Amino acid sequence: MLSGVRIVEFEALGPAPFAGAMLAELGAEVIVIHRADGVQSPARTGHSPLDRGKKSIVLDLKQESAREIAHQLCEQADGVIEGLRPGVMERLGLGPDDLRTTNARLVYGRMTGWGQRGPRAKQAGHDFNYAALTGALWYASGAGDRPQTPPTVVGDIGGGALYLVIGMLTGILRARDTGQGCVVDAAIVDGAAHMMNLLMSLQSNNSLSEARGQSLLDGPHWSRCYVCSDEAYMSVQCLEPKFYAQFLDILGLQDTDAFAEQYNPKRWPDQSRALAAIFAAKPQSHWTELFEGSDACVAPVYSPWQAQNDPHIQDRGIWQEVDGMLCAAPAPRFDGAQPRIGDICERDAHRAEIFKMIGRHNEQ
Image 1: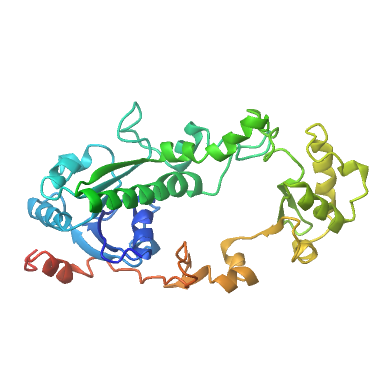
Image 2: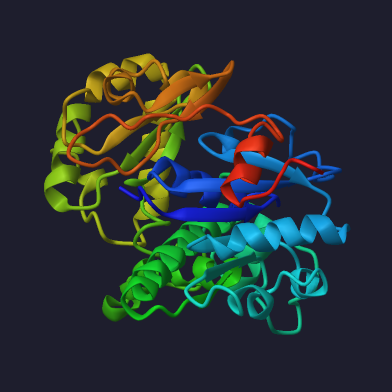
């Protein structure tokens, strides 16, 4: 879908390489400039699934000759992705103003946690911090429990990488029409807060409370996870009355007054305790089979390794092995075609090809 689009990615952690990987999966040519000394973090490995489908060249950007090569690459690019702290790229002479003097249509994507400006702009931070400060972490637990979300999902990926991809594609579309690029300021705090707007819309009918465990989606007995007798979990979220009715019918509770008044918050605690006792009596496999094929909105809670064996997940080919690592297939899909997972590029594997691309001899 993005054939003919070229992106230059400067090596960073987390959301920036994820955004580059997603653009590569969509068909863009993504050239990642790997650092000579690598990224120093236990969260980054030398052989990463986030490098799949990309081309790699190692450059020591502390050297002027390496910065010249990077500048030449960006002259031929539609977009740039960088995920460093504000000011770092400017000090290297590779900031937006430096690169757009020779490539006016360049879309310059900046991935940060706090954004390019503000009191915290130059501070360190991670996924939980960004989600916490914006309010996105607030409803991520039941009342009295510590807020916790799946690592990286809300901040790094949802609020960060996906917004960067949207921004890059929007900028590239405009640049093709006008010849003018732009700077995309993809701050995780902006995106994480923006994703809350669907939940915040519940204020319009008084279904959202600031107190955790009291709102339409985080308080009811029909919107939570329950532990089974084998200590595995089942998820329940039968929001609409017709789905709730089917849920009760499957459990044989349709005529039980204890589960009437689906939307009465005063009854939710007792109803939750009753359902907890019911689910705790049988293993996950029992409940999975019982609700299979129904519209009761109940599903088992799996690890990624368990999920790859589920018939629906297998049918769609969602989880796949790549170089001995479990990875999810690209998304979204187009015209029903099964997306292809690109090979993980080795560091500096495309050096000769990239030098030829910019008309240089492989002298460095």
